[in-house]
Length: 330
Image (cartoon, rainbow, N blue to C red; front, side):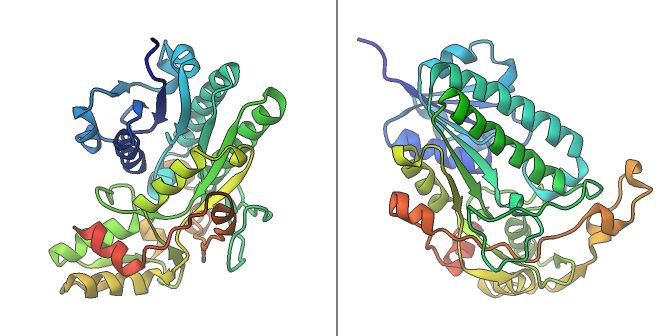
């Protein structure tokens, strides 16, 4: 009797990936994680390591010699491997562009050869500079000019989307694309500029909560457990193949109000400090000819429409922001 098929999770040692791995193992699945640990951490997989149905391959996707066989024997692939955080993107645009395209291309080619269903995680960054109050999956995308380093991530994820859909059309690859909005929760690090864990860490120690810009830019936050639930449901939804879905919370809040909520929730004595973008994201040596404004430009709003997700899988994230802050702060 053949052994049960496994699920591959690239980037499974990352924040979202590790929570997804735990859920899959809890559901009785056999899971293989491929992660080069450049931004992920083995500590995130502490619970997963105790399972006989778990395997970690410490490697880039393109360096896994047995990749074609692993993909051919998989029942599904979750492709979460990616650079994380705007701060890292701005500082390492070259790495973001090269690594994202190459690794995704290698994985999609292998999946297409075996016709293995794959879910590719994209980002709300692809909506770019659009000023719409809410973003829908069929909206036009407005990306900033190449002189602004932050848009390199949006372009890399958008290229991944085009590539995946081309494989779907021309090679018959069963692919689902999700655009993740701000996802937060337990074990998330503020190391790469993630705003909520950064605020929580500062509030716990009484340090100032540093708000970039004027703080009026707004975001919606989604608990990682809600994101994982949506991912698993999309995996099980054959009708979702060939489609793009937003996954995110819809409770909008300005960043300065978020800082106040964190301070209030944690009963902290911390103050709020406004930090100009030019100081938060200083120019690198290769950008000396550009103004600070040309190096970084923020999105003013980022609220998803999630009706399509609910229509296909009968689920949408609904955890309140207050509960999200409390859970993330534990």
